Image (cartoon, rainbow over the protein chains, first blue to last red):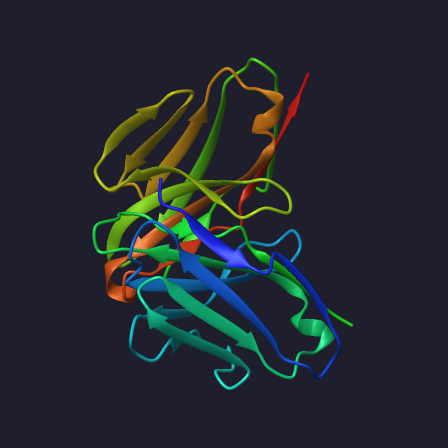
Length: 115
Length: 111
């Protein structure tokens, strides 16, 4: 199956700093990438959908100025959590879908802890 | 919008069969997915149904009835490693093709 990587796999940062998470599709071109957030014992919550070369579409309640998403190429999307706060601590997961795929392929996730 | 319901928890015995149900309501159904997620890890794809009927893939099978808004995931010959959360997700053509996830069913397999 298709492979999606994420970097870093975990990160600890101080409150007020920014953190960038990279999501790469390794063996397919992801025309669409989705960013999810998952709190402990809860399901995945979609944050935003990004299409290569265009602005991301954010879900209701997600601050676009706080969670900056860039999808500059068909194999790379980045999520930057700006001015991180402890309540942003969560498991962030990206997934990619291509024009010929019926499903999304998930990255391994990034565990963010904000102190 | 979409409303997806699945049981919160299930317990089964090693070697047995378990069925995890999922019901949904959507205005523009365009496929149902099942994912497996182990604690602390990202989901992995199990199955995809867009037409009515049963899709079998090894020990796992998934069934869909679009008229009833119902699906189930059937796990046979349960193994301890099958202990995980199982997520039902529905894709909606009227919602930019995005998938909405249910809250997941935590399956515990006991010896």
